[in-house]
View 1 (cartoon, rainbow, N blue to C red):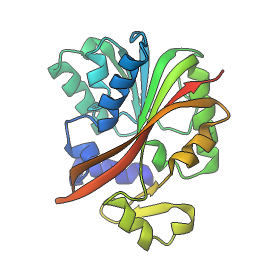
View 2 (cartoon, rainbow, N blue to C red):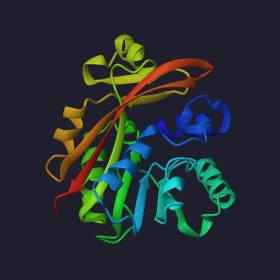
View 3 (cartoon, one colour):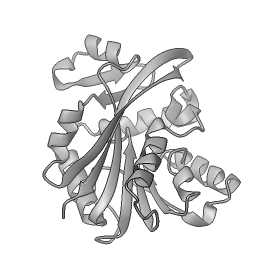
Length: 230
């Protein structure tokens, strides 16, 4: 079960950047640059889907956004609360425990922005993906921006796992360190999946070095900024 794997990752293993690092993903600096270049008005509410320990959305709270985070790991949310307090933005952070791929507890058109940093990759059922996209389209305002980051098949950690996977044909890898299964997408894959509800505005390839389970890997991921068509 994905939830059990992530609970172990945050509470016991702490071997991936999601649980180990306090630095934001490269997707965040890319998104901030995109907003500046497009002269977007950075105010209002942002939904962080699969928010984890807050390392990715706290920088946006410091820019003035009201951050709403949802995650299914209580210990990760506790880390988020502590980090928000230490960064002086606890009054701008609103967190709930909940799962992605299920109805979201927010009103229609509640958010101006939304983001998902590699959490969508953990949804493996078609029904979950359909609910995720439908709910995101509902709670995000028309014209609202959505940032999504996903790992590439060329990633130094997941790439070899994909090559050895018994579900390679479906693009799914199994991480024996955590017990978590992850879906590997291409930019075209995500553009097709989200295309009916969202318009792709921009994309960026990220390359970096990260420590994963005690070893350094060359990480390759990509981010996309999409606009809600509704």
